[in-house]
Length: 163
Image (cartoon, rainbow, N blue to C red; front, side):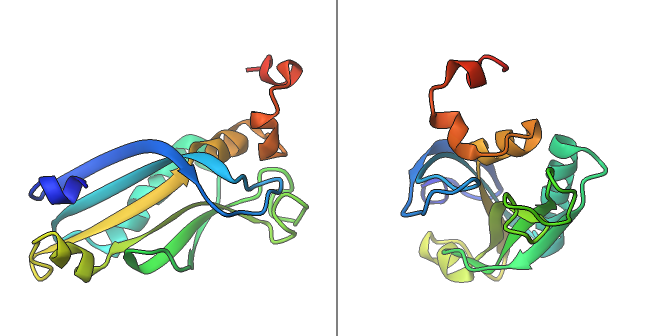
């Protein structure tokens, strides 16, 4: 919607509730508050995206936090990737929370597909961009060492009282 109403350069962060078909487990819920980011301008690169997200992760989780990018599919971006950080519970050794991988995905991102830019009237030869989306519940979970994201919706005053 922002691209339909605004000419580049664009730098926007948009929060909103999001529902998805998802199996509930310690790191996933069917409803979340998502924060989306979008940057469109001349010369925006994959390096800009990776640098922005790495800086975000280190500012939120500490400079010692290890990050990794992994290719993944997300609509409207190509290439798509997920940003992962080393598991806060096991330190990367592997546990139930990180599905024994040592890593936890914190957000999805990618370069805005040229067809998306063209569909709103932007010249994809001139403009490029990146987008990302993250659930704030997952960020809170990781930042505060909450082992199970479902606790955020359980309405347990004993749990909520610690914040």
